[in-house]
Length: 483
Ligand SMILES: Cc1ncc(COP(=O)(O)O)c(C=O)c1O
Image 1 (spheres, rainbow, N blue to C red):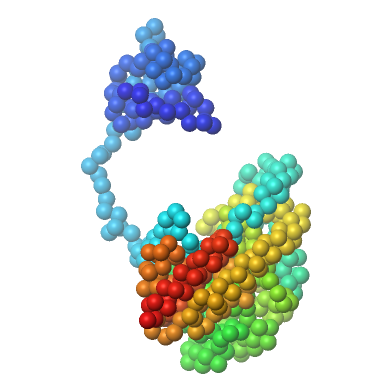
Image 2: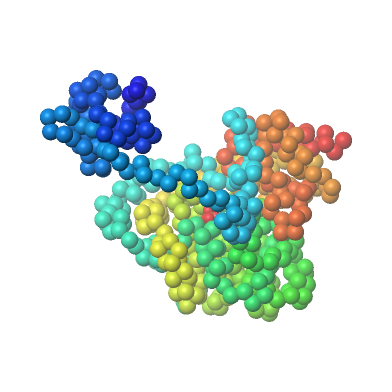
């Protein structure tokens, strides 16, 4: 006994001794009323100071794991915490979870995806490249904000969000051309929570949502988990097919629409300004509220800024805009926002409070200080230049090596490849995986079970050398499979 004790750096020694002894007691290595080694003995056995053992024993007593007898030493408590268990009482949780949890598990592709073994060239991620993060400014933002109002930041905050950040984002959205009068902002844990909150708060008159096909997989998942039927409308090179959209609107009523007009995931398409106008007119005619996903707008590499749909809605209140800096800045800071009609935000604020009380004020305040200090603009210049270079390299490699029938992606962090009808990209994925290359098979983004001939190539975290090597392998394997 006591031979497997190993010290780890960064944790006080007496706490490590206490934890170790607790573990022995809980696991039965030390029995109730058994005498513990003297502090001198244990300090020799564990190669630690005697003072550390004395402190550990005192804490074990406080926690009810040991007791001391004057002049004799310390003993294991007769019934230490956790010793009186009803060990035979087990549950079959599989039969106790509900359909919601079962569906969430079914739709959880992270549990089923191919694991990237070390050395694999993986095009599956569209997360930002963390080597670009300007950590010094993030650290400084944290320290600056903490020194201004640290105590307040660590206490409960407001469900609606951290006021300075809300005010900053209001101006930020105004500069994107949004009429802010009558609108308000709710801070959420990224786009994903905002979307879930909005969907959970909307009434289901007919339980149907219309969106682009293909679309963001997480959105499909949340729509299904919120009980909505999904009607997907095919994409054209400049965004959703408006003719098909109108046909669907004529046939059926929808509770709302979900659109990703900029750097659409997975196609990477940016909807043209003209199409945005026509789309909004159509939605107005059929009175369908629009949920706009504006997650990637800042990653524009060329051309002029395209205003979001909510800007085209002017003073109207029919668009719910969901913003996020997850691709532009740091997805680890789970901060997104819902910008919408102020009465709607008033209701959503209560939904948010009931669910999670509020988004971490610490996360929000770091982001706020970072934005206030003008670091986003500087960082974007660097990130855009790097992503643009990678984007152009990926585009060029796809053109050179891949036998595609369509290739799309106007910016952002990924490209979307369509092969000939009948070609199966799951088979391609298996063949590439054997050669150490993986990507995302496109079928997961389709609302109608189609897209077996498509793939998404995320390039943000792949080195130049691997982009070239990986895409060459994908192209070669595809040609071999085509025969
Ligand atoms: C279409 C789309 N919207 C939003 C997001 C960002 O989600 P979140 O802010 O929850 O990280 C992503 C991330 O991949 C996305 O693809």
